[in-house]
Image 1 (cartoon, one colour):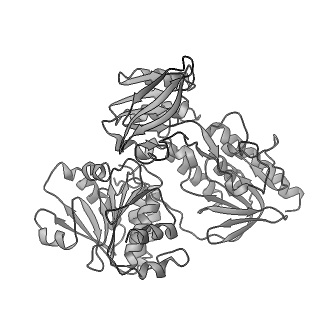
Image 2 (tube, rainbow over the protein chains, first blue to last red; image 1 turned 120 degrees about the vertical axis):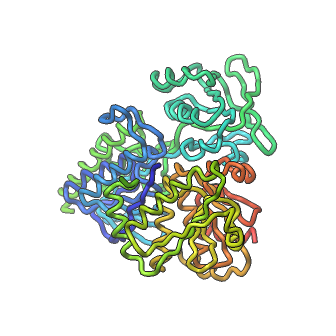
Image 3 (tube, helix red, strand yellow; image 1 turned 30 degrees about the horizontal axis):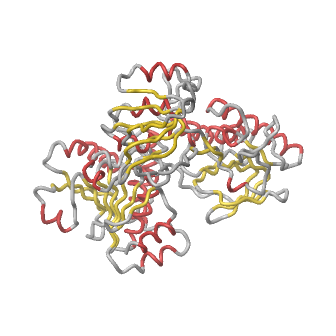
Length: 319
Length: 214
């Protein structure tokens, strides 16, 4: 039995040298580096330490943990490490920011925080599916979080839409509960790591189907099937399913930044190689950035670089 | 050895020292062994807490034997923990408060034990003003990081208005009732047996949903 104890009840000040938006691997790594540079640092996290990684059952490709490590456990270890070096952490939502002046303002639900520098590490969230039925059945048979909702699909025949690492990792987790799984992929192959694919197809109650364009999700009170069109033959068919988990990529958490900072056409934060944004004193790190690979291992590297550049900025600008 | 790490246990001890009012918790178990699979875990969690403070007390009852009492507090099933400082029993945890829900249990204890319950601006008055019976059910799983926010909001509302009854229900332990309310995503909130919503809403929006369903 696991007991997760939330140990962040302390009040924080309204003025910091550095504020990090987001307490995932990128943000917490930045907090470790800034803390060690003796810079007064605050991390603002919306939900739980570890961010998206915390909803991953097991991370197997993050170095240092040969047996793998639970995402939530890694998150809370990183949080502890950041706090050991003096960073403050609060749980709140950033509603708006003001980067117009040298002093940056971060607006939360009930307060404003002022800081000399800001590191944006607010990450990304699962991309929602937009086909008929997808919205109606969300939370009623369609889920975007296997860790949260997996136990509710006991003995059901489910479909997973997607074929990347998240889709296959979560499929393997869901096999603990469900009766059968069909992986519905749009491409002619899976894009997940080979080791995950091997592990998945060992299970007899797993099937895969490729080249599917999703047309709709069907059912009356409950989900019955997914209508697809074969991308080659254009043939239409129905795939029966009693529940659906969707892993079709991510979108960045940048709504609160619109109009304040330069974003790319997919709303990821644009940075240079030093992770500086177009605003002086504002840096970005992790999944929220325009980048090629979004993993815990790359987020951690970003956090270190952003913190290093921020430290240099504070020294040169006279802080 | 206890379930909590030394670090968690040290932290908790310090927190629990802030309690000024005794917190009365009652536990209803059941003779049905299948249903009571988690009963020992619940007892173990409560023991961990009570080893750290003498301000929290636990009394055990049996839903099959103490029928009158169970009825008084509108207890539908067991195992359940109820907060019963006001002899009202309107704050309940059906099933084991483990995983992320352990924090909900601790925060409830701290709120009731210190009397400091935090609300967003303007919400407290509106909740206190509700003069109708409100039954809130919050379905969770222990592995859902988004769930405690919904449980805590419902429980906080119940702390300041005795007409509001707020239940956390662990969906995996009570599959029949989870199925009945079509729980396929958590947190799922049902108000007065009627409408439901998924996800953790801010206090203000949660309150709006309550009013819509009165």
